[in-house]
Length: 404
Ligand SMILES: *Cc1c(COP(=O)(O)O)cnc(C)c1O
Image 1 (cartoon, rainbow, N blue to C red):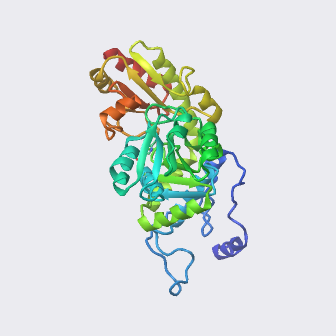
Image 2: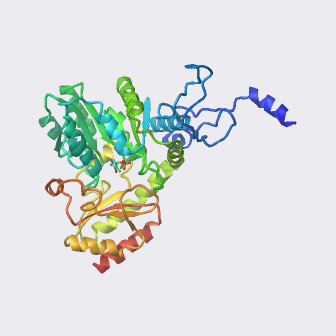
């Protein structure tokens, strides 16, 4: 067959086969937003490196005007993210903090946000050092007891903000109880859940009563420590419209190559999360039996105060493990220097194992007394367990613990 003939013939055949909407999560990871390109059949999503789009005449175009407003590669990522969280709407941002910033812009001066105390340091900084200057108010309560939120509600409380499992102490909120208690009192509250640690593979907050889910896609969703990104998912049409307006009006959008990389990461998300969890469970059990370890924080351990809640609302316990080393800040520093396979660094959720010192790294933006109040001490070590063979990881930890 000549190539023109072949082209003419294929014009009539249907190349696009959308994934079945009721597919399981691991299938959605591979297919959602990744339907073959209608123009060429390319199996991988085209990366539309363009800032603008030709218009037939002013205002007459194919639905794309300018890439801050619309970009086909970004749209694919947004469809994938929405599908994974079981949401009607997904919005991609340039970073996790840009996504959080857009959510806070939904509020007005004088509005109050009630947060779980154990939060990512950058989230705390965005709230206290940026948005408080523009008249938003923030309070922080221990999120492991849902009743704390009810007790701290104010007339102007518009938003509840929770990380669960939280960063870095892996504390678990009871979403079922929380949303029932809160919504009974105030149906207008927006419950925001940062689902970065669990990912949609292990937890889907919208199905547990949350209104908005945010992700730092930099972490597990991207999964390869090669891209910065953020996302918001919701089933609320009006809130999604407001966020869509802000995404364009404030402009913190990810570039098309970043969207492509994030989507490539998503394809293996389900597989990776299982491997992270297997490794983390083994590491947590190993550490909890070590005499140089004071305390281990991992929702998968029976001893963890949130273990039962986690079992109810999550399908896996995740890949993050924190622990207090027996000794002082000096002991912790020695431990970090002795690691060989774990890389000491910020961030988490990549295929390689990382060790972080929240005291002077991720959570340094939180004032010392506030840190201590949340239980973040100078002996706390946070591990992002990668997908290496757990035996090698435990061997590395064992040698490092021996040296301190
Ligand atoms: C990293 C992180 C963020 C911030 O995301 P960036 O992509 O770094 O802007 C927010 N929440 C949690 C839980 C995080 O780990």
